[in-house]
Length: 276
Length: 255
Image (cartoon, rainbow over all chains, first blue to last red; front, side, top):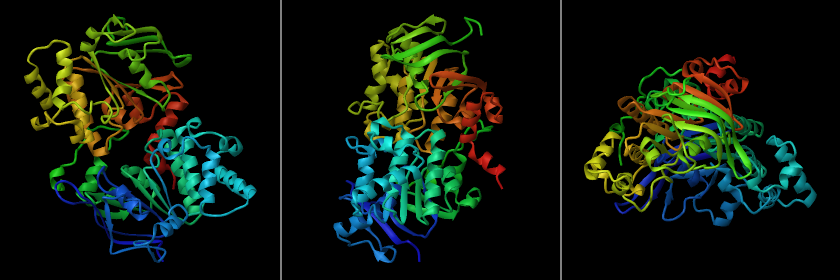
């Protein structure tokens, strides 16, 4: 059985010129696998992830024919029931650790809080689990790091702390929304390798949302390309370079290469897809 | 390189923020018409060098010469005619309450230049923006369009040197391609000299002639774009950056 089964998901926002579907009829299933969602800004990729977690705020409206997590319909769940799933069963790593960590709480306290919200454990066990989780994200002196505040850690370490916090309740699905775009190249690889390893070890499903096709191709099994709220095509990551759709091809070609010889980079002819 | 040959000449440059020294003994020369990149991780001091040249990081020792003239420690009106900067984040670098017209006319006004009206229209055209954008506000523009406005503003005084601080890292790859093409065309048409900060090595391969790899405020290595393209970098740190930025190649080596 797939972990997540979504049919015909639509997210609508009202605008002065009438309602706009920022996600427009997206269907997907996610098993114990790594699914990449790629697209430009405004393609609806982040909104898809947020809709699953019930994080789309009014005036946004989420509709779907089906939105099931482990066979349970997510639409119409009470806020209370949704809180039991969000974080504990499906969790999300966001782009910038600087904005997603609580600046006035030590790292240890906030990871502890993430765990305590979903499980009740004796104090000592709680601390042991936090230390163990920090070691799992390759922080070698968990005792010291637990006492630090977010501004005292680097971006890469901040993101590892985020990952620890998200994985400590042992969720089934991790949604990673541009988890490394705020990080240096030298740290990006480490963070993604880490997410990858933890997701595989724990038999989880992962949705990696990114604008970087090459990165998604490297870390995912399947890639779903989105544009203007719709799925352009879904393909196996290893066949990414054999993409058929002109939009996917355009995105791939627009990236400069290390052994660049082109005098000019090809740009997307938007008139072909332009809807706004 | 000779004294009078270089467009931008830095010698034994040390830059401080308070008690902290962030740039150590940087020496480099950028030739006229050259496109030169500073690469390295965050905190390696690359953006600070641009700021010091612009007079935005006044606490430095050593030599900064642009076009053969020594640079003072603060903002300088004559200097700003020669050298302009484009910042990373087009969402932060344009005044939100000023129209594009006001943004582009401001440098012309400050320097008392005539024909402002015609110049603004001309500038929009040069960066590939339709004239209908002229009386809009930044929030009505996309990220790529805003970066075009920022480039147009930098060109308003017809400088010969542009300092580019991560000009495309806040943009989508498809928009990045458009902005890089634009910068490349402008440099060719106007014979501009670029000093560009980036962490993206493939962008350097596309845009630049040479690069300096920086780490912890020091230059590790200065290499040609050819050396970068073939991976023929000398220092272990530069090679490591190359490997991390080029995972496709590295992946092919694995079965």
